[in-house]
Image (cartoon, rainbow, N blue to C red):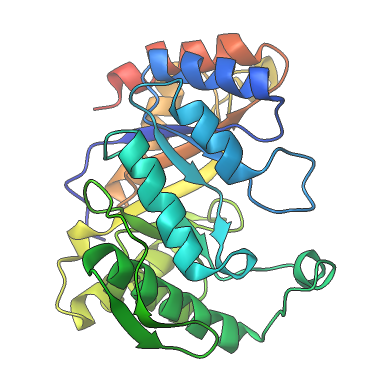
Length: 292
């Protein structure tokens, strides 16, 4: 596997929060070395809408990247998504918006609100088309493209982002993994952490194969795992429990180092509710500060 040249970075997955809680936790994470905060974006979830909350948090923080877990393409018009991302990039001065896109899952989430839910192949093609359209609208005064479900005809969004907006893809199946390696700026492992190092190596192998087939340097594609971290006494032995890093800080650093050697450079984490603020601060001060 190829170890990327990117430094290890960490994000806080905010989960279901009130607005005051989300703001407090985002500011706390920023003050303790976290590089990003991420938001839920599924309409049925018992959480505030992801773009609106993310924008509110962005203007009251200074450095953290704003992203989602994941931003499923079918929920929004593609050109509007492009303009929303460009707008937030302008508002925050550039470099603080990243799109973590998904093709969409869980059909009832879409069908219950009247959004067509295609087959896996159709949703894959729609995501590919969406990426083409969004990048085309960011880069050109006017842009045309004809896709399966999404199209643009001499379209403009009226503004441009301050700089390139990275596009990450949430993926785990072979076709999407290869596409991510070929086209995306980063990969987010959907469905929890890999069950084993062997599974991770298989996924990263597909990602790197896609990059190489497209003539890209595999090290240019970032890689992110989305899971949990726990300092609890029950986790004192250390290592991994499901999708959670467990143990004391020194043990966590060893575990993170293992995943780093397998090509992972980004971790998005949730912490236990009991002692949440102390856990966030401790992870930042005793793990993030020593991770690179």
